[in-house]
Length: 226
Image (tube, rainbow, N blue to C red; front, side, top):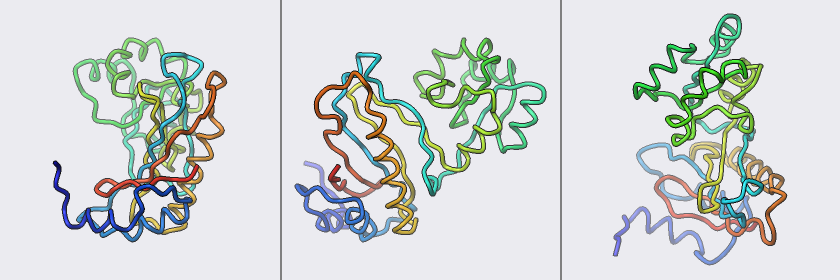
């Protein structure tokens, strides 16, 4: 049986494991958890009533959080010419075309998000087997295949996040840091929950959101009433 630390047990005692809390109360509890030696990431994890085997029941997209995630993201843009200059000006760390594709094929993956205009997909398409499993393949559904690469870079730098369901029908996303102000966390969590509610796929039948949990990197989860 796994033994938890005294700090974890103290945190666990602050919430009722069987109770579902409204977002404001859940965030109050989360903020009361003992601090760790680093600024923990706050995450929302949701179990959805979908069948991921069917294409019309996929839950995938992007959402802009009001206060960002507190994490700096490294963005790669496949672009040439003026689009490449615009991407650099917007803050992209890596910009290129065939040279970057070759580097990625060689095993390099030191970036978080890849963006490309439709015209560059002839270069990017062959990277599907490499970037797909990492969740980094540019896609129109995630807003990472776009003619306006500079806008996309700016949005992701400002706190836009990408999400997608896993094979079990679960969706998880970072929604801030424990050091954020109480109101900032509440607004970010509610923005994400409302977005997922509105993203219910047409093929999903019956109960859509089965369970939602608010948690931090090193602390127990708090059930949410959604």
